[in-house]
Length: 469
Image (tube, rainbow, N blue to C red):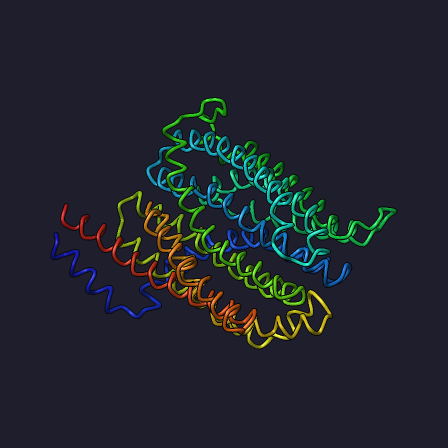
């Protein structure tokens, strides 16, 4: 038996690369594309907010959006990370056809995510009231950012409810509905945002607060729509027989948090490094801060697309891991790396060729456009690293390996990336570009270390499986 397995593996090595991974390319993309679109929905809210404010409220208001959204991005990724804890568990249980346990996990996940949303709202209010005034930012920027940040904080509660149902459905392989709800939600957000900011149909102009209200309304509608879909669709009936919200199990809650909490930390270490970079850049000037918002918003969209591929990779990895098919797991994981690298290469080319055109979507301020153009060239440099590291995290999450990757992300961003960025940007005088070069080094370190970790873990599990045969 061992000889036959090794012979099969040897034959697969001699297959042309495309044909070897072709079935996995197709399956992963079929699962990933709707996830990518729904993931991008989170970033498109910020994109729409930035574009609307940049064109209708001016550069200082755009800087206020930059300050608030960069701080809130830490809050949002903590929430997303916690909610992701259920997805690989659901995928593994579904791979074993344990439908009752899936419903019980949904009950516990909804309870955890609502509590988490309330706590994150409290943290956001604390930051808005007590931290913002002490960050050495332009006073007018802070004044406009405070109410906007509070409204974003309130919107995290319906966002967590939406994500509970979204991650449950995606863990079972149903991804299209969340995609459609995200698309319609963003259309509503844009319409309401323009209406509130500019002041249409008799509504007084609200400025930055207007996009805060539109985001809150949008996320509330999305949560209601996703919950209605889960409970009314016939495809989920067999899973929901055991769903009882008041029956919260400590062991299941711990099981979810053992994955969700480290995932939240992984995202927090990365995003908080970028938030730290935004705050440092804000001390340089509001033009630089607005330019950072333009560049990071564009880079965030490609990151969230890669994060969608990562979520799909986690689901497929969880399926293979639950079925004890480690050869299929490796092929599926490597194909996910191929897909994300090809995609991020394309976005790197777009950032390079359109570095002075893309910022025009946000502003007509020539100073902001020039600085943003320089930052987009640097963003093009880190696209491949960013895509590789986020897919690596998803693959490892699907195998239940979250603790070591959490340590890797901390080292990459807070020991390597941000300190080097601070040294280059603030001490050596390279400004915003120096800070971004430090972030490139952090992303590169994360991508390399996570791939090494994947190779070690996957080969270890595969060897253990072969030795048992």
